[in-house]
Amino acid sequence: MLVSFALGTIITIAEPDLQVLANQVPSIPNETLIWTVALGVGVFLVIAVLRIIFKLSLPLLLCILYAALFLLSFAAPADFIAVAFDSGGVASGPMTATFLLPFAQGACEAVGGNVVTDAFGVVAMVAMTPLITIQILGVVYQYQERKKDKEEMLAQPVKVLPLMAYGDADIIEL
Image 1 (cartoon, rainbow, N blue to C red):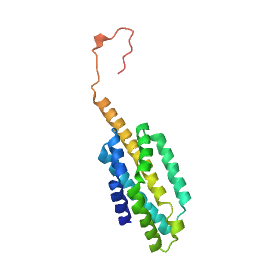
Image 2: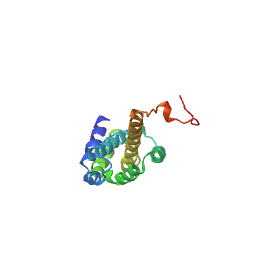
Image 3: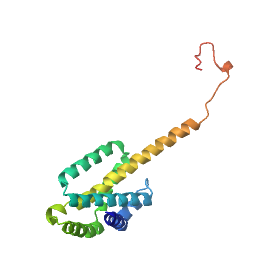
Image 4: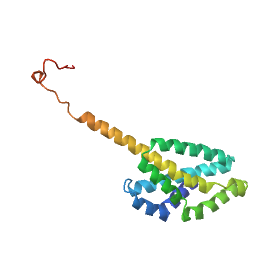
């Protein structure tokens, strides 16, 4: 599992298309975008290997993960949704496919599985990864911005007027 995670992360960091995408997105720092996608691919590669080992159903797993993905799209900011869908195609580029397909086939053969049925779907899992991780990043950014705005609002001093500033018809709350 550790090798799967490390391989997925390193391959994604080396993906040239992701580097280009990161340079074109001004709202997210380059390193943050690259590491978010890379760590997500590492996690999802571990899930893909676990699917091979335990012979989990690919359609069921994809349906659950895509349901989570679309629910996240309601919570994530629009800027992050666009970047997430763009990075989905980028993360499954030439480096990823070249390294992960043989890795999945080897993992499948090592556990005695059927290469055709069990190793199938690794690229689908990797292509879905940025969609989920970037949207989670967007939800975290949105939460931090709201928290910061709330703290700034609470830090502003409350203006207290002297009693003489109120007229006879004004309601004064204590």
